[in-house]
Amino acid sequence: MELLKLLYSIDENEWLEGYDLYQKLYKRRSVYIKAAIFLIPLVLFIQQIWLDPHFTMGYVCIAVCLAAIVCILLTPSLERKNVMRALSGISGDRYQLTLFADKLTVETVAQENRPENLEPDGSGGLIRPENPAPTVIGFDDRSMKVIETEKIFGIFTKQTSIVLPKREMNDHDAETIRKTLNRA
Image (spheres, helix red, strand yellow):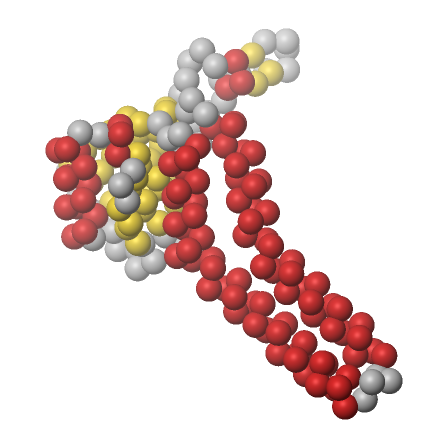
């Protein structure tokens, strides 16, 4: 049974807020664990050099461990910058959320007059590509987390991130989403 159908668009700030929440929920811990994995041999190589300053391979190993730690810790901010650049490609896109009792779906709504949505057909003409398959999240997914902020609803699983801007919904829509997702 369909509970709600909502047409919306996302601006860059809302999407980045959702992306940051997703990173905190699913990625940050693994970044710290990976950095700690390289921190342990770093400390051991420093100790070895302290005991034997002529152990020149230790200096190389320290440099490798430090480089790995820096790369691991910088990766999330570099990914965020790439996401910021990619957001210009989705500006103006519209999405449709359909909320059911046991799942939700989000699909991209075709924009008829956008030339970048057209592809060459091989004979000099342009065709409209098919819309991507809708994103479906079942409420039985144990990795699903819902976060509500002042501006957005964030619905996250390990594979999916959905951001719903509150500016696009009325109080009844927000309450329906809140009740349905809190029950899930």
